[in-house]
Image (tube, rainbow, N blue to C red; front, side, top):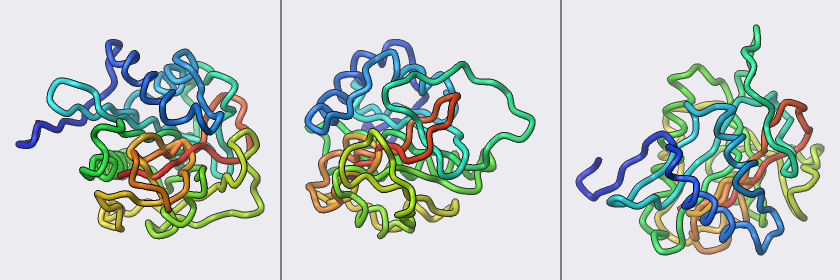
Length: 225
């Protein structure tokens, strides 16, 4: 744990009440909530790339990311299939969800989660990171080196959802995620980044859900603060 009481760790069974509550508050208005069973299935598909951020002893944010073929993304209405070891696994890590609780936004916690995930991606040999920007958050992620692919229409992620990706870069965390209201990533989720112009509410990056049957499109990624 750092001197300010912030710690990032792997998800434990006891975290799911808090994660489900944060996810619901972040995505209900957008019509993009998934529910506990589906969220757990995402994490179970790649537990080594999914994390919780604690402030003191309380979960205050989380990130869900999993390997997914480039230009494909999870179906928000379906749970992931059990993980299967592939002979040639995807070298793309899909940032599906990144959320920071409302009361903790504006402290740069979304950036910490993003930095931690980026370092993890590098350590595990991923070559690219993708996400689905939602809620008009494309500008936020563009400033952080992500490129939009307008030819891909992430079905099920709401209007204005944009599939984006970027090569893995160790300095991704220094690319501008500010501890302030930023229209790109809210300290809430990462299911496809929502409008980067919104307050740095909590980093939504619902990115792309990854499941056994790869759905072309994007995930959820909101702004991360």
